[in-house]
Image (tube, rainbow, N blue to C red):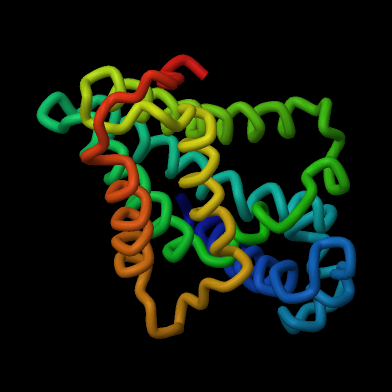
Length: 212
């Protein structure tokens, strides 16, 4: 990459970071292209040189983070030396650290209704939806495998367990402060203690529901 192209890419990344911070604070709908231009120190014409719309900025803000999460998920899933409960804990920790490292990109995504930003039937929206569903499915699969192996209690449905832990992680967009007292590792550790201490060490139930 030549110097000019590298400078262009670097500038785009900085603009995405600034815009995402505004999206997080004001909401996507309330943020105008003019707001982004003011905060970046550019006029609107120069900003249009880098991005054609705030929707384009939004897409770029979350694409890299979601792709990185999927790469992390695959590494966890393909680790032959890790048990299903350990994989589940690693997945929780990986996502919480990702929310921190990619702040505020993923939180912008979590707080927005994608359907109000892009056509939900578009290829991009379908791709993002599939990526999120892959992570959700991984939670459910690891919980189901843990129940089948006797590692987890079987009297709570798989879907309820998966939605609970995924919900705890996703709700952090409402309160997590990357510069606050609790580091992402501390938050993830607390989530794991709350969740896994409740799942482990319970005898099998006649009301087991492994499949749902």
